[in-house]
Image (cartoon, rainbow, N blue to C red; front, side, top):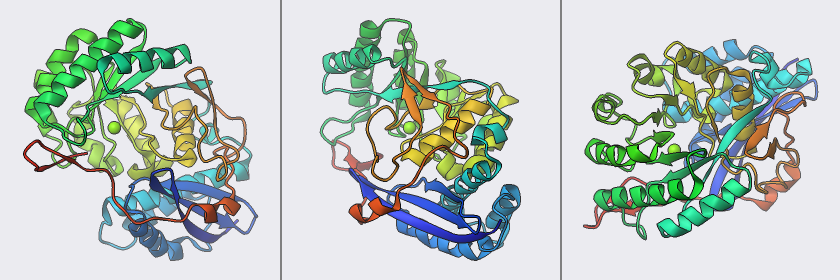
Length: 377
Ligand SMILES: [Mg+2]
């Protein structure tokens, strides 16, 4: 079998773009993958086009060799955009491999550790009362894990206010759902170490399952300070590309959960390695999944085959989403994504719907401080 085409497919859906990659073969089998860096899709398309000549005519089953060629083939490291492009390609190749061997991808990653992957849903509200009410509704629908966010007030994120608000919302949700529902909170890199420490200390009494990504990724050693002062579990890593960017937080045990983004880290090939490395430090994986149905499916296959899996970000799973583009998606029931029996990723892509969702230039939401200065979204 040989690769005959590598096609980047950007679509705008809802409020943002998504970039898929479809890889075609001379056997008539195709694979679908997804690129993980939102608002950088045209750069991703360029990166994918640069990789095309290394892929056309190659056997798509040689996923490890192709990964190494794409990563090291042009001497200079290509950075995170390159890794997101390579991730999309790698996931598509695993989809092809599963279809060619007539097995679900998880069977090729180690087999079925579990039948289904528990997942969490994001929840919020304007006031602690509304957030608590919305949380109760999700629990009644079957969700066993919930995730709050550190929030702004109408586009203004003032750290001390955000910490107070977050604690009030968290306390109200814990009171509403009781001790058996796990509650996480995503800081979304909106705080620096001192405010993270204040947040962590105040939340401790409400038993958070984890505090997610308090800091940006550029200086991972700052987590030493956070780790020293915050006893609640941390979940870190959704920015990271490659095993090397995960190295320090794994080796120094700066996190309890690895937020591997399969569409940035280097696809299923690299995520498998990071997950196994985490196993040597008793770190569990919580794959990041804010994207479309190809990302969700790739995450699920890794979760199903991985012993040290904790919980999966559901993203849009569990609600109607991109049904025209993906008429077959992974299934969801009562707080779990279910392991598909279908070969490959177990999803189907419908090209006819692409033209209804043309790419749009733009950028993500922005936040500011009370004094008008810029701060992280
Ligand atoms: Mg996050």
